[in-house]
Length: 201
Length: 201
DNA sequence: TATTGTTATACTCTATAACTATA
DNA sequence: TATAGTTATAGAGTATAACAATA
Image (cartoon, rainbow over all chains, first blue to last red; front, side):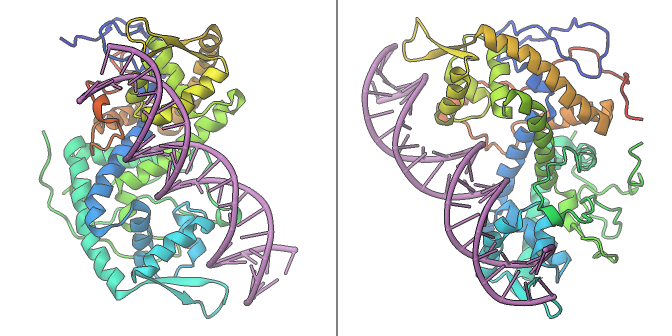
């Protein structure tokens, strides 16, 4: 049966609807939570991370580790503090994270010639090779999301999430590190057209 | 305005674009991360939670605590395990969370007559009164999001996030508790605000 | 034997203070 | 004096195992 649906609601068409009637059937009424961006973001993030972790389990890599490999791979020579700031990871928490990657021979800390305090980060040959394989895993993972939302839905979601960038301010960044950090917006990179099939109904 | 990013969607509209060229300017290249749903979900969730926490700081209430008040307020008499399952919180971690609310006199554990093992949860008068005030705070918070995304953008985001419900499977639920938990989808209450007031200029 | 709430515990993530070596 | 990396530590959030009371 499952015939929930209190269709008759006022026609005010508010930006944020609030009041509703409690559930009649046995189902739990989520009330406001069903329209709470934060609540649904949290749920979605947990679900997507669960799939990511399962997908990357064969490589024994966590999301944060993967993000470091991507940033370092694309921006060789960056300082630790730059990478950690780009990922909104406090430099103090970034140390053991980087250690795990360096211990596995994927990333190398190199002494910067100009400033002997800082460490320039580079992928090792092993790290570069692994990242290539990881990219294939990443594509599987993202495609599963596209299968759930539709390719258009996924694109819309990416755009909307980017639109929330910088919201709230609480970025968890370090004091001085909030220099000029560009948002991770996907630029209109064209080349390399992956085939556009697999559109769910 | 919110007019950043040229809308050029490639004609091919690949499901997943992958390869790109490295950045030329000094900006950090996020590569895959800019198209990673999980990465952007995490960022957005952190930003939105930061605003939520700041908004609810006057009430000294965390998001999880608020979610419990909403569920209990809308579904009085539910067992602890039902509420915790509805929120994807393990019943073992739910105990101290509930304690914090009961200690503040917002929620009451009542002995269930039929099953003396379980506790039926109800809001106190104080809890009911507070929840009403909290709803006003919640509206401020959500409206700030609507100001950032546009009312339509926020609605689209809610729909897309609901579409990811159940993805990944890893819900963190307890074994037996994954009975029939309906998704927190917002029912068709007020008609779609095809475009209401408060649209960001 | 299974379930409800509970305790104890551990592991991950995140946050703050303070140290070192450089600048 | 300020910065980059580091250490130590504390706090949330989340995970499993095991127990008492009840079904």
